[in-house]
Image (cartoon, rainbow, N blue to C red; front, side, top):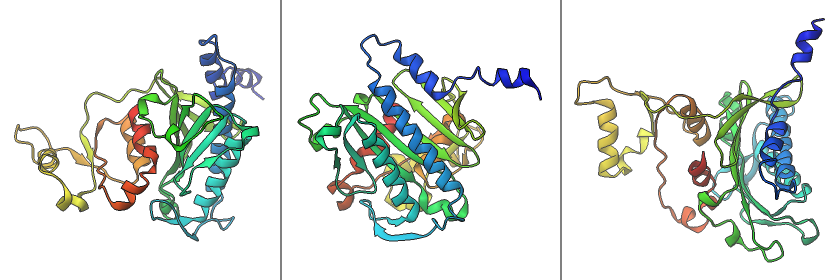
Length: 291
């Protein structure tokens, strides 16, 4: 047994250690935010385990319901929603939760309330799990002024007001990307330790890229400037090489890819009646503001 190597493995920057280090930079901190993040991390670990054994545990397939976006819910959608709702409420640090899988916001019982609001998509891209495409969880955190007077307006805020935002990708590896307003860091789950280890510190999108991502099946709905831009990507008139198209069709997959390989990702939203009625509380767009 290589004892020296094992000893070296204890000197790792785990996500818990990272968050605690950030906490020391704020003298007024009481640890509530750290506790909330630890419960989100726990939820991510649980969902990662469920995703890995979905086929064996008969978690693949439809649950027979639709979510607020009008999408058919998978069994994993429902399970992931329940996991995060339970984890967030049990932290004792939340007062209102907004999930893509629930038409109504969840208001935490006053006896268990804290000062934070959490908006999340418990399992983005779950329709792809049958064919092995990566899926993930998206979340954002706000603070309220008075936890005893909470309304839905507490989460109808611009992304710049978020205290933290992030996502967790469940694929060939489990990667959690987090920003608390001071840079973006990526952590990879080490299954042998059950810990998220810092593997991608201070992520910055490269300034230039050769790839663009867009659903060209909706080209007939584009406005003039968008159509001209995509045309320029494919047929540049300055003699440069055309950009390559890479499109998965899931917000999280494409966003994660462009964090490491620079390019242009176009997320075009049509203002349908369903979107105007309940716009997902801007979960995806609010996270994009920070990440």
